[in-house]
Image 1 (cartoon, rainbow, N blue to C red):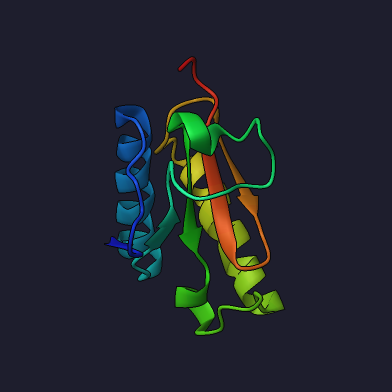
Image 2 (image 1 turned 90 degrees about the vertical axis):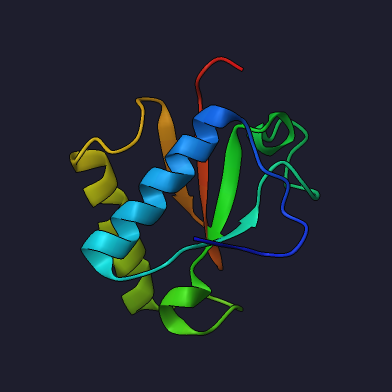
Length: 112
């Protein structure tokens, strides 16, 4: 797992999820994830779980080398990664993933 500069680490539960996601991506798909955001920077809504340390973003550009947008093929890879993570129950219940234009958003909806 790699981190972009100035990423603030989230809470312990989300650090566990990060590790699970990275392990799964590396072992089952051959991709090392890059964490692009934790509890830092500005996010799309004031209610973002990033601000309380319950969300992180990881980069899709490591899949296709293009940081501006995800290709249809890599969108399918991202969907397969997410489905596989949930199927194998590698993250706690209440963990959701959203495929954004250039990253995957992951948030834990547990009680902060």
